[in-house]
Image (cartoon, rainbow, N blue to C red; front, side, top):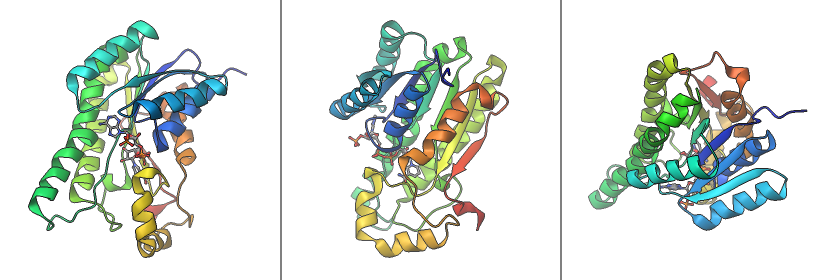
Length: 256
Ligand code: NAP
């Protein structure tokens, strides 16, 4: 049976690890040719190895999403080496956990670094791929968060919450603008997903993980694989009339 993403070319940022890696493997299983783009070249190469070992198609690209010129360069390289991009997943993201009242230098650096990756990075990559996505009537999937709606007390900086609110705003505004070109733009809002991003916080603050789980109807943390189904749905033709939306994959956190 043909996969849901046959003949698609998908760029996934931050796909050397965690949620991005799981989406890359899932897209490749559905037949997409995946451009695995990550700041960590070794991690990107490992994702490609896992995809090719499973019989899929992928190539790695070393990309720091904060570097606007490099984003343009890589967009051109992907076009030449693989073909016209039809799917973009803006997944690369970082978090820091200082309170706003902590050392001013640390707080300022957190703000600048988080905005540079989580928000400007989304702009940079999307803008670099805009013409390819318009030409292919493509699909954009942005990885947002429950923190696109609220601040969560597991230690998270104010900058992270602000950046994820911004990702949702970007999703809605771009969906409105690109609808006429047939480009769909949606987001996914993961809850607490077990990845390296939060491994230290989970290990150091089990009491806060418990507070989180007590607030989660499904009563468990998520795995990266829990985000793959929503990401495939938003990238494939099954969601042909869905744009400007966010799918929450949070175990029900926002319901109560
Ligand atoms: P992760 O395991 O740390 O993976 C993120 C990947 O992005 C890493 O390979 C990281 O490389 C890479 N990266 C960091 N900065 C980059 C840059 N400037 N350019 C390109 N790649 C960069 O994190 P994750 O949990 O899978 O997070 C993926 C996305 O999901 C993020 O946007 C995050 O905010 C979002 N999210 C996660 C959760 C959760 O609970 N895990 C919940 C809601 C939303 P390095 O490892 O070298 O930094």
